[in-house]
Length: 373
Image (cartoon, rainbow, N blue to C red; front, side, top):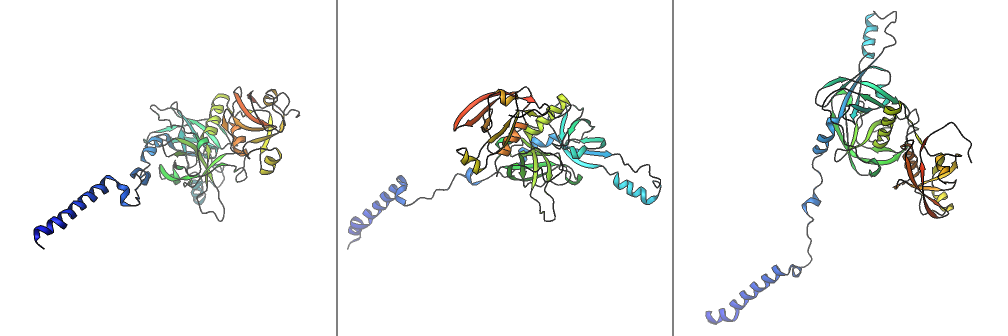
């Protein structure tokens, strides 16, 4: 076979065919078989740094140093060298943290950080120092309000702890062990925690639980979201012989701010009162009342002429929303009621006889015990 005939009969048509096939594969990708496209790079990469969140929140987090009166300072043996050494150890300043929540100088911290302190010093993230004046405190909420007088203060931006979900990334900012401002990172482990049995005192329910490390000195510091917004005031950890870390709690910011406003305005915490007693809805109650879920709280008693009574609520009603915000569980609902303020008018959504109703109630301050219906 001559070369010319070979090129004419085989080589040239073959080359043309290969060119046409390549063109089709480029024009119609489906002809290449199953395609396994990679997700966009933005989906593959999570946050590589929380520096922006820290830079936003850290200027509002302060270190707190307190000094308390030593009751043994006038002891007959106070001049003995060993006794003086013991006194020196006792007089070491205690450490804690706080959060500037108002540019006027108001700081939120824990009650147990400042309780009994004669002197309270605050060190800002920028190095400035100031003596703090106690405004008020409440042991039951483990919260205290301080005030400093310095110019150009940075107040933290407040987030929405009601929308916090398990798995959300959080950062704890404080002064652990007195080493200076530090940041630890973790997630929201649970919401709506009731830890009233873990420590003395009557604590509000609906705590935020996190596995971000909360060490001594972190108390009173900020728990912030991935954007640097305040979600809570770090308050406590679970301690025990088998404790291995990773179980810490923060007071939700909305509760802490309500306590602060009450202390500033009234000098004490004034809980809002609807005039009801309520309990969580368990599966048995949900079946008995033909409820679609266990969300909400069931009213077990109404106080005569209280806000709920005047609004038309009755025992057996199940409150599902307050001001349009869903009560996802009973503990959350009871805590939500604790944030109401006297004089505030709220919209209550409730279920009665399988029907959904809405009513308005004007919150009042809790009076002396009254007769129940």
